[in-house]
Length: 138
Image (cartoon, rainbow, N blue to C red; front, side):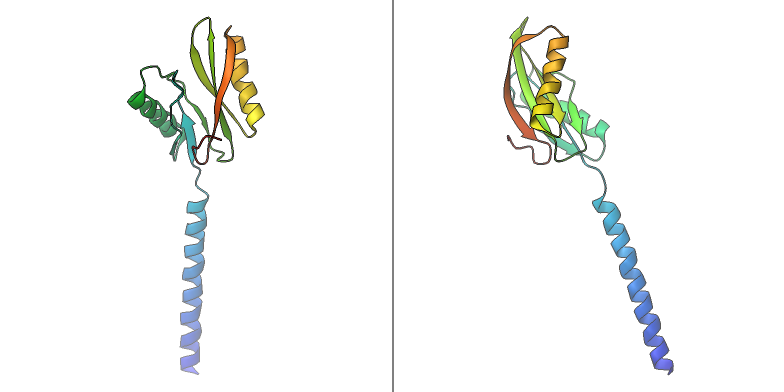
């Protein structure tokens, strides 16, 4: 009888520890990851990721500067890894590139086209889309 009670106590402790471990794992899995990209005129900027938006945006600026002297210093960012970045460049009144981000490619493109239209730019073209989750051209 004493042995059975001891085994029940040990089993209960083991289950409690397992439950606690699962809670910590679930909390870690739910942490947000931020993706960001700072556009440049060569359209070569990479997507970078971090645990906060501020850090992701700062990292995107640094990543762009490592490979270009034409960085916009105004990164686009998202915490939705299913989103897409649309990279668009315009040539009038001067060359410039920008990035829009949204859950659908067409919405990301529309957002960056609006930025350029509001600033008086024309002769714009889509260069490519990038996946927020993988950073790959899509």
